[in-house]
Image (tube, rainbow, N blue to C red; front, side, top):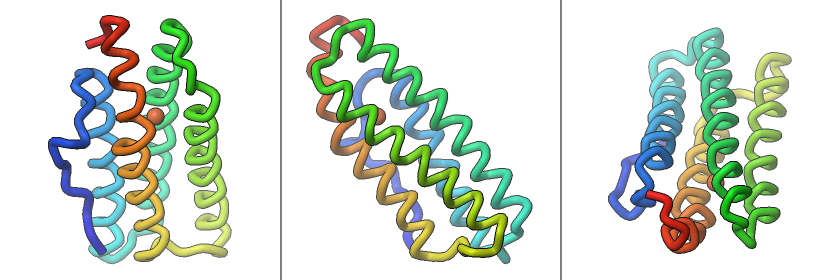
Length: 135
Ligand SMILES: [Fe+2]
């Protein structure tokens, strides 16, 4: 299973957003490495909780920028954030209850969602926010 390799095209050019995106990618990589190194369950839960915490604060940051500047696609974008947060909570519950495992397919889901979002919907707001002077 592939770790996330950061590529220049993932950058938005908005410094705080890029720092937060890198941090989230690092955490997903940490989860993948933990799985490869024996899948310590307690450690996995700790990393999942960290991803939840940093995702929530990062999404709030983006949503604040959308709100302040009146980003027209805000509602659709927020739905994507809500979906990811829901998936993290559902996975955490299922993992703790032993109904779902941390494996290649669940890890791929998290890394694919993150990269598709960063490289898709997030890139779409860049011209708008930059046009409003956000840097
Ligand atoms: Fe986003």
